[in-house]
Image (cartoon, rainbow, N blue to C red; front, side):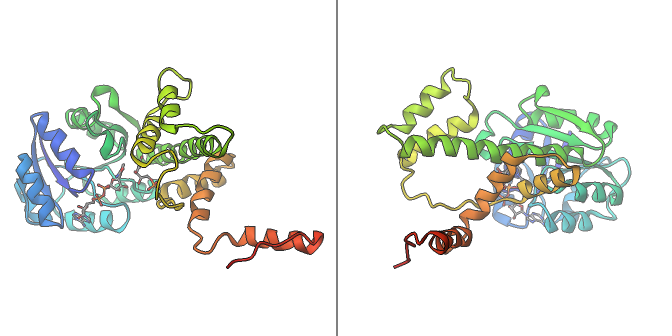
Length: 299
Ligand SMILES: NC(=O)C1=CN([C@@H]2O[C@H](COP(=O)(O)OP(=O)(O)OC[C@H]3O[C@@H](n4cnc5c(N)ncnc54)[C@H](O)[C@@H]3O)[C@@H](O)[C@H]2O)C=CC1
Ligand SMILES: O=C(CO)[C@H](O)[C@H](O)COP(=O)(O)O
């Protein structure tokens, strides 16, 4: 099969490599010429623009987008518009908002597959886990590519109609936030607690047979090995947050309680207060108000 890949960053390059390794042909484009050169070194046919990429693809075009979620997806689809027919297939493998994917599927002249992709660049050697939404015929047609990009045939599934792939990935990310938060809390208590513990050793022993073993826990072990038990100079600030925000918004709309995911998201927002949390400062001042307790002051 011949696949066009647009967006050759951390994730897109892996899509290129794995598709080539499985014996397929790849035509590759990115706004950054260096990224296109890297894909060409790996064996892909380089394209100079999106219309050049389209021209290099055969009659039935299969195109995988791996650009940042949001405007970049719309901009790419706008450029593809006019070059696509109903027998063509576009896959969006990024972390797009599922309602955007429903809208794009309706507007796109080709069959549109929204594909939630999990595994991250660090898991690429195993292949990804792919959650796909959209028309069944298009999913079936792309099975050889999904087999290549995923861990294998068990690493991808069609979830349902348009939007369902990105919907499942959005909630996956909410779970990811909460798991990271709970490992963080456990290790914080171990770090602050009664014993002087080597946290890499704790993570390692937990990863060998413990109920709570997982890939994220293996990554905790790696973090303590590389940064030390006190996490060295890693700052108390967590970026990201869009997929977790969408998960919480959806839960509010569906009236489904998910306090753990909400708390994990709140911790991220709280971590970004430059000057300490206003709410905690007010609570401290109120303790003086009612109890004449001392108020710790800034220097
Ligand atoms: N990094 C991760 O752990 C994961 C990322 N994702 C999602 O995959 C998508 C890509 O992520 P990354 O590869 O990490 O981002 P990245 O920032 O490493 O790569 C994005 C690439 O897209 C290119 N690009 C941007 N706009 C473009 C356009 N209009 N036309 C052509 N190329 C364009 C950029 O030049 C860049 O090379 C995002 O939606 C992200 O949320 C999904 C799962 C895991
Ligand atoms: O989808 C992913 C992992 O599964 C991406 O790494 C995503 O960026 C994680 O979300 P956030 O940036 O909000 O932490």
